[in-house]
Image (cartoon, rainbow, N blue to C red; front, top):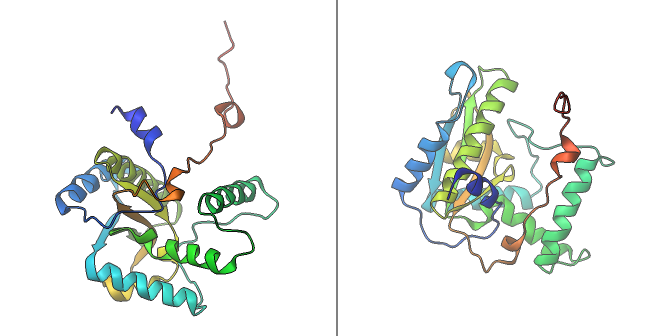
Length: 226
């Protein structure tokens, strides 16, 4: 597949097969991620890739914190928007489509909670990837660079028939992540990515999220001149 096809094929996967992913394949994917551009070649990204017993323990403790109502204190706030904004409308629209596919009624609080827990355990993916940066760096610059690396990672995964889901749920309890994975305090845990082979029979994986047309978000200047 060519580059444009890969970009269009990439989507968020929320149900995975338990099949393991080889370290050799993941190395190739991380190498592609590291080809991302960065300000003055600073390469402010670091990756932690976890699977097996450590990931099982991590999922368990994160979900326990969620169910116990522990205070979330992420190193970096990923999402946030006003309730009367178009961003909130898009979020709600996505949730409605997922719940419809999963046959989760609005009033079924138990099933909605079960769905929430899936996100906090990497949607049951066999591999979890954490993107980190150094706390000595300013906030905005590294985030742009990490975003580029994150996109490269997700696109490279498509080449290997792997699926990904970029998620903040797994970084909302950084103290748990630091303890289990041995991450020092001078590193900022920015985002996590679930990685594995998609389970195409899983209902939510049929979702293709909508995008605004280019005409709605692009201003063209000078192109109408003769």
